[in-house]
Length: 144
Image 1: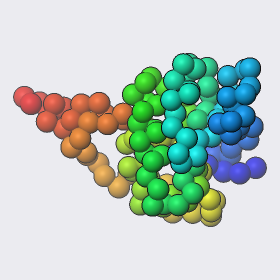
Image 2: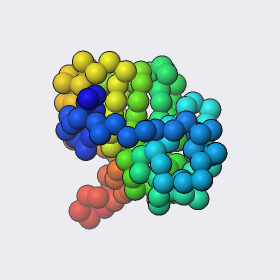
Image 3: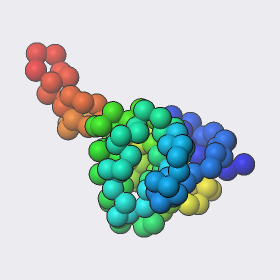
């Protein structure tokens, strides 16, 4: 069974079926996991966010940043389910992926999980607002 980082821990993945966006759009039952590829913006999901258990966003290369925007859009629209980064992201990106709203990570090379996990703690504070911390630092500080 494959392993993933989920909610800050390495866990066994339950392995539920994840549909492509085209398969999901054609399905009558929208309460299924779906995977977005670069160029497949999350707009079609917005009317069904309360029933989708998992949205996986694929990163075919670590240089493709569209998935960061997709994650933020989903969280800002109220998506509460699992948001999983999959593919070729690098461990140096984990903190930024989490700040955009990802709570699960499935790298293409599972052997990287142990080295990647501590990267979620690289920064103890962030200045900007984000889905994981809606208030900027100056608003979180006492007297700010």
